[in-house]
Image 1: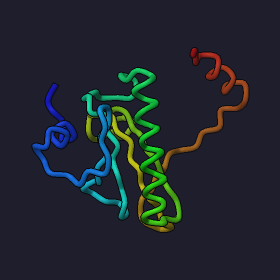
Image 2 (image 1 turned 90 degrees about the vertical axis):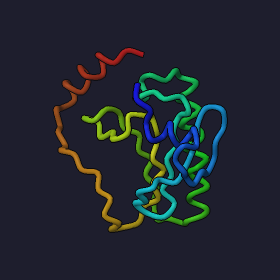
Image 3 (image 1 turned 135 degrees about the horizontal axis):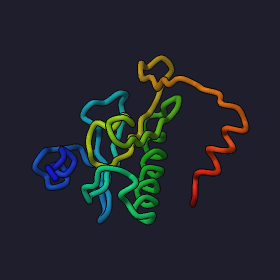
Length: 134
């Protein structure tokens, strides 16, 4: 697998403004700040998607994202906060290295998340639910 830009940041081959790191994750300022305080929380282990992590790794990733979100809220006082985790290009993932965006939000900041709303009805929703096995 080719090294991602995040792996290169972890190895200190590319400079970054690091917010937090431990043995499993690293959090750094997104170079493409949507709003001031936009942080990426990435796994140190290079894997493409969330589904490649085990449950403990995923839980730790989101626990750190939660801590970062609270710290960003305190530091920047945004009107809202979006935590976004995407997988594969069809799911809007642009860097093939699992990560969570911690994105402070303001009204009319230009960041949009738009998708077509479909309402299949309760019976179809129940059929969809029956396919999901935990």
